[in-house]
Picture 1 (cartoon, rainbow, N blue to C red):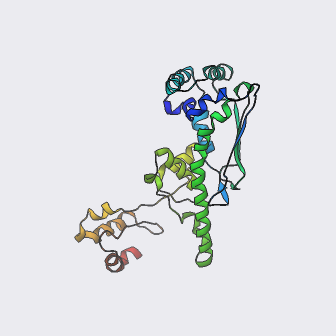
Picture 2 (cartoon, rainbow, N blue to C red):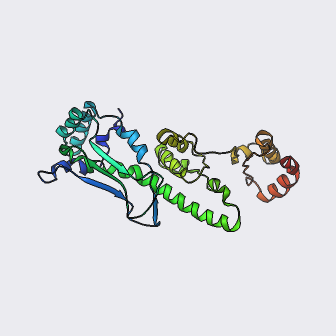
Length: 284
């Protein structure tokens, strides 16, 4: 198993020593996750199920314990080898905790519990808070994305109701976030969180995460679209041919296609190339 998937190492350093810090006789620890408040009055919970399926459904092994002992001891922490080996022998390597949560995607007022965790074996009271780092990371980012996406959707919907048709709301905010986040996992979790509120996305990993961890099938949709390189590769003198190629390749009745048109002169492109030379082809 990769070290990054070893749940024993998926914590903050100081938590490794906490098994020695609770008072004698402790048998149970109960912790919870909430949004304490901030920019929004409501929170959209998301990400927990993906974490559980990815990190908690596989039991720990003796090899996991051994490597964790080696690394954490050298790191300067007292390692709870007996505690982890107890989990291995008594629970077949599965963590004796129960996690409860509100339904993912549910809108919850801030300052309310989103998820709770508690140990189910009194000998593993120390395990509850050991998981805090991983659990918070699992839900903090995707919940933030889902919450912000929901807030933006409310703003768009309000203006559509005043000025247009709210029927198309599901495609009014398109996700291109994959290139701007820290990792593939961030793109997957954030992209899936966005799909709670909208159906338009170019973040394929988000579609995959929604399918893999939430059984969502194909939850996001996109269209053929040009970028500057596919237009400028034709050369400025052949700019109209680049646009015409997009129409020839992808346009058909009812289809949507996006063609970036500001590589050279957006006004010339819209008024003359699209507005005159290609006008009838687009209509047809």
